[in-house]
Structure formats: C-alpha cells, structure tokens
Length: 104
Image (tube, rainbow, N blue to C red; front, side):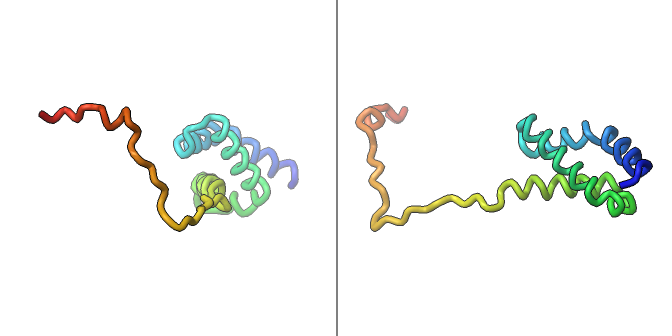
C-alpha cells in the first residue's frame, strides 16, 4: 500500500477502534477476546483496504468483517457424542430424596 493509503487507513482505524471493541465485547462478553476480534477485523480490512474504502459504507463493511470473524470462532468446534446401548442411570442421591418439597 502507498503512504497516503496507509495514512487513510490509520485514521480510519484510530477512529473506529473503540466502537469495534464495544461491538465485539457485546458479542463475546470478554474484553481480551473483543480486542482480538477488533484487531482481526482491522487486519482483514487493511488487507483489502482499496475495496473497503470504495464501499458505500466502510464502517458497515468492517462491522460485517467483525461479525464474520466472531462466527468463525465457532466453526470446527463440535461436541463429541458417545453412543451407548442405554441412557445413563443418573438416579437420585439419598440426600436429594430427603429434601422436603414444600407440599403438605
């Protein structure tokens, strides 16, 4: 990227950082993860800055990048299942069976 484009992006980044971190925090509830998502979003925006800059709404474009990055955190994470012949026998502990229900 040339120097004017770098300066343009730097100005954009500095102005958008707090809002992107707030959005990411709202999605994750974790400050460090929010900052990571904002940084990832801005890095991706920088990589395609010419296209982002030409967009009708560059702010919306970068927010969409952030939302997609957040969704990407969940891809590939699958809950493993263990199939058994019968469901597990949870049973009631003796202590729980002795707790009054409040009915008389």
